[in-house]
Image (tube, rainbow, N blue to C red; front, side, top):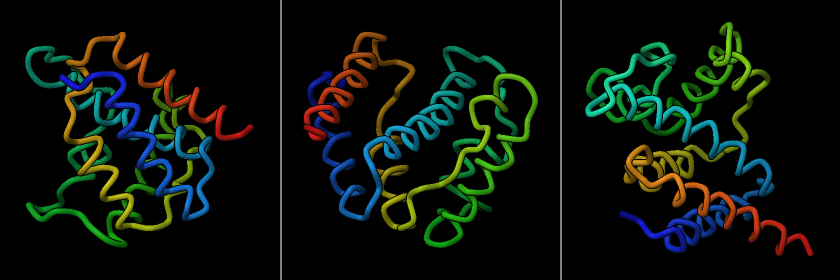
Length: 149
């Protein structure tokens, strides 16, 4: 299990990389939230939770990783992510509210792939203690506030 401080540092390091590409910290937190929602919805649909996913197949976490058995990469990944955000934003109910007016702000497909594969997919977010996730989010916001001073 990842300790909160390690998770915050990992998130912050990647945030700094994206900031160098012109992405604001607020945009980063927003993109991270969208991606974590998709990842955790996928985790919740498998064992031990076995809940039905509100995210339709083809617009879910696995669709960001692979298409037709081939890893999704480059422009195809960036276009697919934009399509996911746009499609989910048109859904009814809570899913539509979460993704309404969502836009991809990560313009470099290589960095989007690293965020998805190297950072988010490597963790089992649903199995992390709620305090760890809360501490990680709080730590990221604290670092954001300090950077704005």
